[in-house]
Length: 591
Image (tube, rainbow, N blue to C red; front, side, top):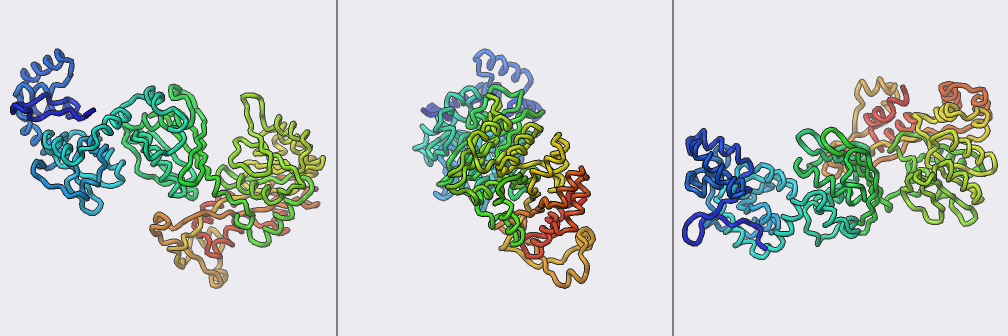
């Protein structure tokens, strides 16, 4: 099957039908032809009628076919309008390394011939100066800059036959897959293998492009992929080390195809575009198993999709590797070995709470103890631990699962999050009846967890009796070791952090200059900072008296509790992070 419409000079020396699809913006071309005096309005009207009668809709093609417009003259005029050069490639000898710059399927489908390559700039010959979207697509596919010259279509087809003779069958597949509608994509791509693996033999461009997007994100250590439809473009951003970084995205006109492909992979309903949807993609990249949590919500310009990447092999299950200093490590080890009570980990979404809990559970997981967790969702599977998935469709809520778990006679329980009074009361009752309970809350600091539980409706005396400790945490970006250099704090940094000249005389700080290893950000990787609020007898009495979180915090600070900022500054002093990052991550908490 040959998908390229053969036009140009026929065997008898006359021009064959010139396909309308070869000119992207035909109405604009007709306007230019009229303004340039190359064709009259009556000739355009006749061509419109002929195009209507033939059913082709190709008005420009009818003008060329009838001889009203000279094809080469029109092409030269269009090239001039778009600031492109005309080039004859009929007798041009193209080096093999230039031909190899574009695969045969791309060259045939997009009807382009590479003619030169200099550094990162690839120049291709094409026959339609108005098709700027084609250049945008090629830039995205090839990951580099692409420029164009204009050549007659007959010469381009001859060059394709000469340099890419073996790729004709592939081109048919490419054309079919790129142009298919959302409904057709379901039929072609919904099977499990196509949806959940990255097969190098799969020739569908949209499948390859989405796969490339995920693989690139993984290689760049991204935790999230954001596909965001804007008014005139389709923005793609990766969250790397907690910060969003924009990368080259596909052209706007591929937005619907991208959205459909991701929704197919996540087993979402591609026909439903009015309500939010959540799904999951499980894939293998190399020898790594990746789990992607997919969220789709409708926006003004289309569906916005976020894919959270969970690398099962990268989770840190060793507590010392989380970034604890010796004193905090000793305190945490003591807390997780208590026989009963509640240990809460607090912080905003994406602060590493689940990773910390998994590391705690992994440390105390022995054959002599029974551990059960209830999570939404189960992010990582831990060997030797019974993990229960929340499913609200069958009324398997946190509270319902927790109530049933207690009948399993566990020693240790982990509740993914305490979200309501019912869950909080069951967790506290479990702690008071001899179970060690781990869970999370969304609060800014550790003492704030007490106020949060009381606000839910838990009696202060129950909180004072059951709670053993609260740990607040955040993640600081690490300074890139490859480009770290000494750094002198600014006046603003000294003022905000309260750094005296005497203090600065005895401490050194660093900052990343930016290099290829860190993507020129100066940071690579993250480390945790922690605030550990231990419930002593004195603090339990304050909780029982229903004191405010501010009172609890001040008392704990006076008695040795280190704040998030204190721990962050310690890590900046050690050259692990920067003062800029310390201020950015902890400013709201200190306020």
